[in-house]
Length: 283
Length: 163
Image (cartoon, rainbow over all chains, first blue to last red):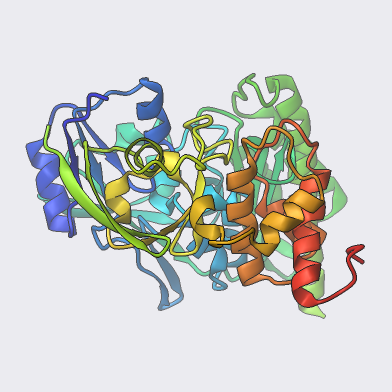
């Protein structure tokens, strides 16, 4: 092992200070579920590793109808919250119990496809990401962070400190298709949130995971939804549009061809659940 | 490279180890403390053979720098084994033939212990979900699920056919 120093700052300012000082050969980790495998395998060999576990970034709570999630909140804790059930579903679908006890929400944003299921849910929920650096902080839409490889959107001296998720007012749904029911990377992951007015979709966000190198919004499909009823024809059109987009990889889990086929099915199922929730909600 | 002294609770012992930066709990347990029940498997967090309990929570010890458990309670198969004989979960694993090579067993028993502590009479689905991260290449899993069910039934004082 080539690591010469493992630093565990006890606060955000200390962590940012390490980031400013250690410009070469530093890896930042939270739960360690993606960083440690790379170090164990000798794929990554940083000199300095910084853990954010002690940095006090693990808050979780609702404030003014916004769920605030500290970057190092574990997936086990996220699965246990009941402010946004869809986010709990996404957390539970990720990894195994032993992994969820370590893995963090902030880290999930940087987990390469076909991982990163929580990020897919956060994208559909229109989450924002709060970044901090010793120069100050800024808040950006998660969509901006994940437009390219997530790391590209962060300056070298910035850390993700918090996610803010507006508590959804309309129906939401999350589904992940894996090779087995639990602890499987995704064939495809789908998360959706809509608002309806007089039976018509007034707002739609549909996010897909494993359909490219990072989670994406299916904007064509969203356009097919807005202004329409959530009926079979609309759902079919949106599912077709969603399945055509993206660049799904062929890997050990599935071929790109299969991912497209399944994306159409899972999107249709998720939208069907939204339609059923809407009917149920009006009764 | 600076070595660090880390103190934590291992079962009912206080232990202190001098470790290299980022040494994993898994490697320290085996190589420095001689607690060899905890296995090294994939070193990716994907096989479950290194699972231990930290403050009662199952965690992949291959992904966990030992410095992060300083001041915490760690349980391994050794510490879950009573001074005399076996724990009820271990006995159930023996009775249900829930292992062949045994490599996955310490991790399976750690997770089963954590599960039954939280959910004394788990459904079959809950058992399968809890053990989803623990791979076994020998048994086909059925005997392991049987063992956990058997342990739960015995604890609850019920019939042993698991129904």
